Amino acid sequence: MDLFSLAGHCIGMHQQDPETEFVMSYLEGLQPDYIFVLLRYVLELQDYRYVKRRDDEILERYRAGIGRMSKTTKKLFLELDSPYKCDGYKMDYLNRFIDVLEKNGNVSTLNFKYDEPAFLTSNPRKRLRNVLNRCKNCYPIDLSEPFIDRQNQILKTYDKIRKLAYFDNTCHLTDVGLGRIEKPFQQAVEKALNHTLKH
Image 1: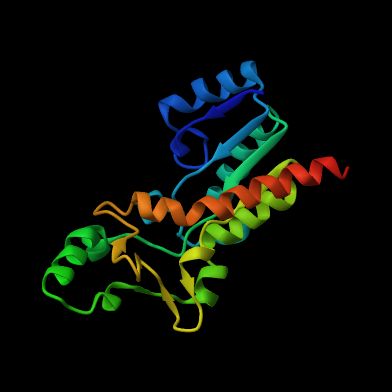
Image 2: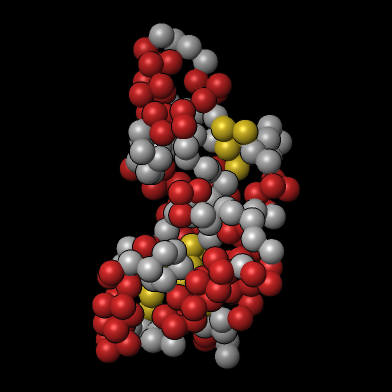
């Protein structure tokens, strides 16, 4: 079984990168069994920018990059967008978390607000839904659920019992945060594999 991993900026979904053509050519030669596209959708790369559907060049880049890549593999796993939009003060999260702990403050104030309607209708999610509907061997990986508290309308940012943060200062997951996504990641992959066995 071949397994190939790559950085998200190389797949043609964002602005063209010098590495894109190299990576695509490499994949076409390798023909890996599985490809995992795990990336962050960010404001700086215009993932959240609204564009009229008929003129949506961002969607076209999504389609072109994923479409080309899907032809090189049996299964392509595509990470969906996260409800976390890391910008401004959120980028200094771990420092603020430690500061509140040291002062015996209320760390629950560091959880982020969660707006489910906005999240489910975000531009990245709508574009990804479009791409997935067109790609027969593409499978979504949704890693957002472990962090969502719908009852309180918040995104959990730390382990309440152990008082350990899920994020560092650059909005990347800590080891504790990574532990939260292991199960949904495994379930998404198993679901795709079981889908193959049934057909």
